[in-house]
Amino acid sequence: MHRSGIVNAVTLLLVFLLFLPVSGVLAHDMRAVKVKETRALLEKRASDEKEQAVEESRKARAAILNDRKQLEKRLARLRELNRTLRGEVKALEKEAATLSQKEKAVSTELAHAEDVVHDLVGVVRLNAKDIKALVEQNLQTGLFQPDTGFLDDILDEAKFPGMDDVRSMVELLKAQINQTGWVVVRDGLMVGRDGRETTGRILVVGPFTAAYTLSEEAGFLSYAPSGRRFYAAARVPASGVRAAIRDYMEGKTDDIFVDISRGGALREFTCSRSLWEKIRNGGPVVWPILGVLVAGLFIIAERSLFLLRSRLDSDSLVSRIEELVLDGRWDSAIEMCSQFKGKPLAREMLAGLKAKGLPREDLENALQEAILGEIPAMERFLSALGMLAAIAPLLGLLGTVTGMINTFHVITMYGTGDPRLMSAGISEALVTTMLGLSTAIPLLIANSLLGGVVERRIADMEEKGIALVNVILRAGSRQVQ
Image (cartoon, rainbow, N blue to C red; front, side, top):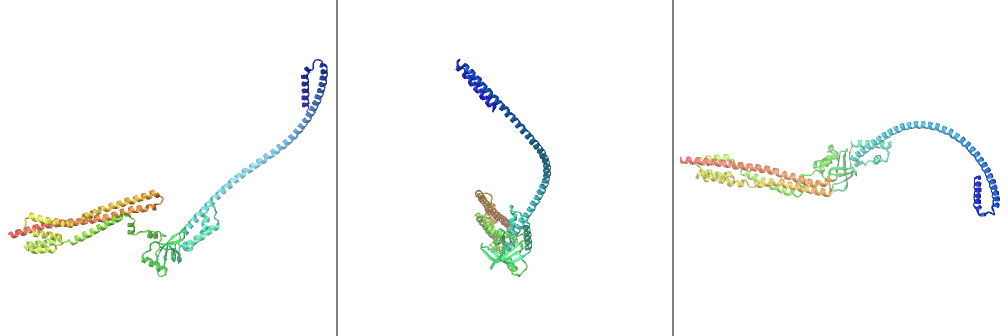
């Protein structure tokens, strides 16, 4: 407050001094008086304001001193509180360190317990999975339909298995162990070979084999775990097996066929194909190969029959002819050869006997001409048989190529994700190759054997022809003597 009064006084004085020159000389005295009065007034006012300011300063100083004392007291209390809190903090830090060590120990124990529980749950779920697979694969399940829904709950990762679930697993496993030793015969639903569901008499031998009987049919059953249903095998077994199944189910016998491979042998029996079914899967090239085989077999049969019918004991015939010729009984020798006119050797001997009066060279030529006349009939169809033997593997190779073309076409269309899509083309390729080789090998063997027989016959005819020439010349020399 005193500072603002002083400022106001100074301001008035300055204003007065500014207007002083304007008053002029005449107002000089009045102004001097006025200035004195004003100065006195301003000094008094300034003095009052100074005293007031001093008083206010004293009061402010006293207030500040009082506030300082209060602050010092508060500061002392805060320092004491700080010391107390520091002690408490140290105690809490010690306690926190102790608790931290305890926490680490508890965390370690908890982690170990969690690992144990995790392993235990994993073992329980693994066993649940195994038990579920065992139940689903067991043929007895198709008859008794046990409840396995709790196994799905155990296998659910979001759920924790409890002791009740473990007890249920144990009970189910015990039931499965007991059922593996059961032989059950009862009426049940099955899918017949025509694809329709029907009711039949079903036999289940443990977890191994299932069979059925209907009014006019008996056979084996396959089991589908997904639907828990029995399906009749696509092929019925032999009559003896069907009779054994009926007799066992009727209690007439204690013997029954059991597939210890749990369906493996049955699937092999169901999926096995006959030779004709395999041949039909070979594609269109199979038929020309079969035609080659039939033609080759016809030639082999015809040539074999011809060679068997033309067979003759050449040594015995030549010996008889030699005796008759040396005795001069030419007509008897000719008549004996005429009896075997269906034999090539007899016809050769007959031609030689008819040319008995000719010189040796002409006689040999006559016999050679007779032999040459018999060769075409003996070698007939052998060249064709060799050609067929050469064609068969080529046709098989052609079928292989067409089958692989079909396979690559399927790969282009559908990729290689499903091998079954490619099996048709590969089967066609392999079947035609197999069939072509199976046709060519016996035809080649037969052609070689038949050709060997014909060559031996021709060699024998040439040998016996020379012998006949010698006999005729020797008989002619006797007549001259």
